[in-house]
Amino acid sequence: MVTSEPEFSIGIEEEYLLVDLENYDLAPAPDALMKDCQRELEDQVSPEFLQCQIEVGTKVCKTAAQARENLAHLRRTISRISAQYGLAPLAASCHPFADWSHQVYTEKERYRDLERDLAGVARRMLICGMHVHVGLGDDELRNDLMSQVSYFLPHLLALSTSSPFWQGRDTGLNSYRLTVFDNLPRTGLPPVFSSFSEYQRSVQIIIESGLIQDASKIWWDIRPSSKFPTLETRICDVQPLLDDAVAIAALVQCIHRALYQLKRENKRWRQYDQFLVGENRWRAQRYGISEGMIDFVRGEVVEFATLLEELIDISNDSAEFLGCSDEIRANREIVKRGTSTDRQRKVYQEHIDEGGTPQEALKSVARSLVEEFTQGLY
Picture (tube, rainbow, N blue to C red):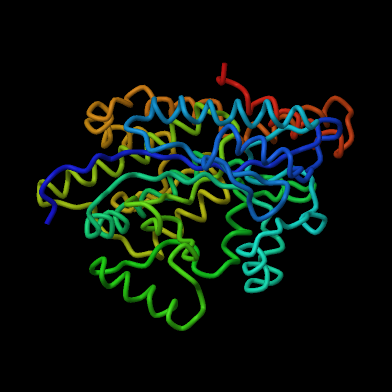
């Protein structure tokens, strides 16, 4: 039984792609670059599965404002050091035109094991995401909220979409990253467990069978972290703009506390079948914020802007308590001007309309993503 309110601390992890500043194609990170980053950022930065990727994580933060300050520091540092090597980071979930088959894997035992285990599926993993951790010290509370937060995962995906292009083509999807990621085992919406111990028993069966080493190989859209006493929301595309990343992360934090408050009142968010939530997940993946989602109570598709207003209303008390009212209201700006996917397509089409070639247009998209990476950092 929960006896005291959790801290609802917040942490943000982001994965970036490194590009050559001359042609905006992907480039592997030199060993010296990674060492320079680790010298300044210590364990807040690490290599990723591919050598053209780099991962950062904020410290444990009490507020979204603290997370923003720390994330801005991480982005500034990565950008400055990368520039010394003729490179630049971009925070989009797929590169507009790079070929996954040309990428080089990081020489690390963990990643080599992953490649051997997942074969061709792993080799296509040229994708980046944003993970948001919310501190919940009670295991049973983490399990209980995991099944309830799942309802809102499609909303978070829709707001965060940043991966329309794949290998030089517009896929028609707003988050192609999720299409690639869903090819992995143990992904998608999490199962519903009656207790945290049931979750542990289920995971332990797979571990004891020798199929995975630990719970970090469970890649659901939301999961109990295997390293920290947190719930880790993993469904979001990574955000080119710092302010968008913080706005979405703050919304994640507020959703958790709002659901906790319901629990304090002996209430809970209605549990809907994965079939229904999965349909909204697909709509977010395909259309982002442009075509709305199913409101299961109304029994009809509702404009996303309306759904966001309802979500902000649900989260208002928690936002005031957590000191992030401005951050969650900033999600309205995402809907107003469009997600990263919308902006990328606009940059591409404008270049085509001006007489540019498709390859030139794609390079313009990559350039715009590099420019967005540093907005709001200084």
